[in-house]
Image (cartoon, rainbow, N blue to C red):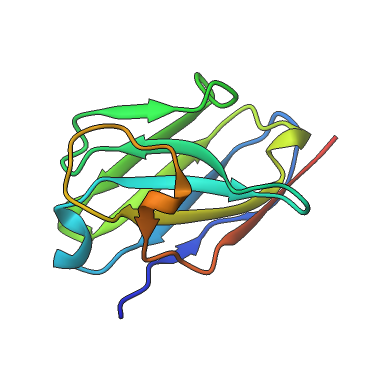
Length: 126
């Protein structure tokens, strides 16, 4: 089983930026939509952003719209999340994951995803 590996998290002040990466090896991922989720202690895993298999379509949670940008480079099997204007409420562990099936609609339910990475911690101080 091939798991993606997230990186790029860290501690940043409110208003700052971070760029998360998700190395998702080869054919297992390039034909599928991918998404970013986040989870903070005591809360359910939350949808953040979605991108179609070819990067042509994206979708965002209302809480991050206009601040975060999801992108992918299929040639390098890598998913990205550019996070700007960070707020303390963005503090969480961020995960990338692959849709369970090949489809072209936005899916926000984390239960419809598989191949989760170990996550990367993002902490935003006020």
